Structure formats: C-alpha cells, structure tokens
Length: 513
Image (cartoon, rainbow, N blue to C red; front, side, top):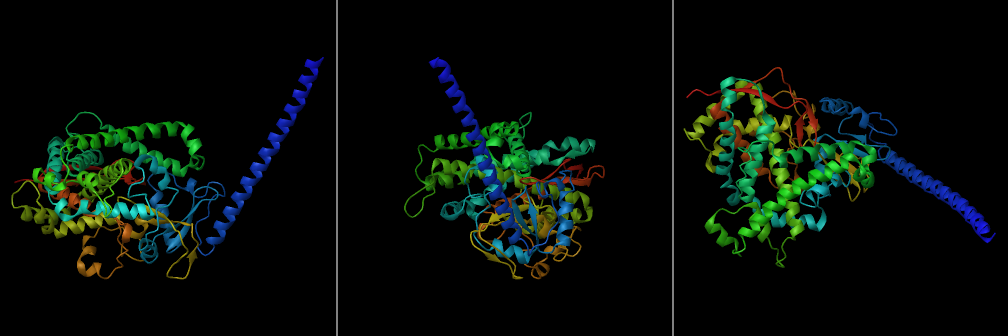
C-alpha cells in the first residue's frame, strides 16, 4: 500500500516536472523570440538610411547567392543600383553594411577598428589569434614585433629562392608546352607558392612540387576555405554547438588537425635546429634570417616575446596568407596575360631586356619591369585575391555624406566592388594596365585600389607578395607564350581567397631562343 502511494506521488511529481519543463521551454522561446525581434528591429532602424536589395525575412540574401560563378555579377548589379553602400543580410537578424566606393572605404580603413566577430570567428579555430584576426593591444604588440620580418634586408635573399621554386614549376610545364594541351593553373601555382613560402619564411625544403600525389596541407586549406564559407552562408551553423555536432564540423576538425600538424612540425624542426643559438646575429652569419627566426627571437622593450601559442597562430596565418592568396593572384595574372597577347608581348620584351639572358631573378631586377608591374596591378584590380574584408566598429561612424552607423555594427568592404566601380574606373571590366601609369594613379583616390587593404591594418606581407608575383610572372613569360583556352572561362567564386569554380586553364608553347 505504501509502495502504491509512493508510486502515485512520483507520477504526480513527474507530471508536474513535465509541466514545469514545458513552461520553461515556452519562457525561453518567448525570450529568444523577443531578443531576436528587438535585434532585427534595431538593425532595420540603423540601416534605414541605406536602401538595399529585398531579401527573405528568414534567410536574408543568402539564397540569392547561387555559388555558380554569378555571385559577383549580382553584387555588381546591386552596387550600380545602390551607390556607395547597401545592407546584406545573413539570416533573420545579422546584417553587414556592404561598402563599395573609395570615399566610404577610406573612413573604415583609416581606422584600427577590429575585424568583425562573425565571419572571422569561423577562421579562428584554424589560424588562432594571429595578425589577421587579433585586435587591440595584442594586434598592436604583434604587428610591432613582426614588422622587422618584412624589412627589405630580410626580403632580398627571398628573390632567388622564389626563382628556384618558380623554375621547378616551369620545368614541370615542359610536357604541356610539347602537347599544347590546356592545363589547370591553380593547382600548380599553389604548390609552387607553398614551396616558396616554406623556403623563404621557414628555411625548409619541402620538395612538395616534386613529390607525387596531392599535398595534404594544400588539400586541407581547400577544405577549410570551403567549409568556412559554407558555414557563414548556413544560418544554423552559426551556432558553435550545431556546427560541432554536424558532419561538416567533423570535416572541419579533421582538416584543422592536418594544417596544425604541418605548422607544428615546421616550428619543432626550427626549435631543434636553434637549440645552440641564442642571438640573431650568430644565425645571420650562417644563413639569411627568415620570418620564423624573427618570430622566435622577437622581444619588446620589456624583453617579452611571443608565447608558443602566439607563434603557432602567426605561423598558421602566414603559411595560409603567404601561399594561398599569392597563388590566387599569380594564377589570375597569368590568365589575364594569356587573354591579352598584345600586353604579354610588351611584358616579355621588357623582361628579356631586364634579365639579359639570366634564368633567375635578382633583387635589382624587380625595379626594371615597370610595364609588367602595371599588368600585375591591373590583374589584381580585376581579380583581387582577397575579394572582401569585414570590420566591427567599436564607436559610431559617420561617412562623408552624413549617413551614420552605431557602435557594434558590422561593415563589409567589397574589394571586388571597389575595383569594378564604374563611377571610379572607366570601362571597369576592361584589362588596361595603363591605368597604373603614375599620372593616372595621381588622379584617383588612394582607396580606389586596395588589393592589400590600406591604413594601419594593411597587409604586412604585401611587399613579399608583390615580389613573388613579379618573379613568377617574369620567369614564366621568359620561357613560355601563354595562350587563352576559349573553352574554359573561369567562374569566379568568393572563398577566403578568390577562386574559380571550374579552375583556371591556359595553353602554353615555348619561347623560341
């Protein structure tokens, strides 16, 4: 009898628990919905002065991006309709103000406002809090410590190493020159830039260009780029828990491990080699200084260096930024020259005269190819390796036309949109290197061309990247004629770097002696 009574009491208590749980769920749901509606209402109020394309109330503009190579065209159409800036919604309550005019861009790039905590937070599990995503005092401290790693004296010996990597790639291309069959550029150039960054920044001969099979690190970078982009476009994946439990989250962790193992091994080898060295001067008597030397020995006025975690984050950042962005830039440069043989011919004549029979580039040669440099810049205008950037403002901002945004708002800079803005560039889709003659550059806003960003948070490695682009372009044109393949037009897609959905294909033939 007592047992029956106890059981009934338990049943009654359990039914009350169900009731309380149901009430709690309703309260949480109502609270979440109230917060969501308040956030959406606030964002709508803040963007009233910025008309933009209509979007779905739940998915925003996400469904309008088809990921089929036409997304940039859509962005340019909207840019024509909505001058200077327009809102872009990713989900029901998250909004960027997308800016695409130099007069708006200079307001944000002239500041030290941090990178946004939406898109960039998805990359942190991969590259940590390196220069790309860090902010405040940490960013300032790291930037100051790392700047010596990009001094001209450090960059000079890299030119010959870049030449070696480029020539290894060009040797492999001889079979394509013989058959005159089209081939995909990006996979070759990506291996070459990885080989180059390993030699230059980490004094490591990776042999990744001559090894058979697909390089696991490059494969991991591709995977991570695609997954991060997919996560940003998929509203439920904005939740760390949902993404972690998903199949895509599993793939992300697996690719992160490959990337981290790669950089850990690079750091481990160097620390092992440096056990007997305590000063940079002693290292420099044995070989040139590289980026990793600067990282490991960097000290501020209080003799504080970088922690092991900070070093790994900066190595991960530079390993990615130093090979993937330059691979995108070089691939599209070579493609542009294949499509414009008249400019290719002028570049080749200039290069032949500058190199005077040499098969390698030297530091002094970089300044002897001004027309080639203009062609490189024009390709970077049309195909910026980093097509967009984002910041989260920490204080209210007022643009030149009086429109304002409050602190906490996210601002996206469309580099692609600025570079093809018809109010800034005449015939913006036409390849015209003469735009970069000094007299033409002086007539434009300095923020009309920002492939490496601008202001205090500009790309610390831009001289490294430009040098590599010049070296590879010059040595390639010295050996091969580049020929467009009309059957393969690149379908540009935004990832962490600019890529082509169907690859970047050209044909080549040898340059006659």
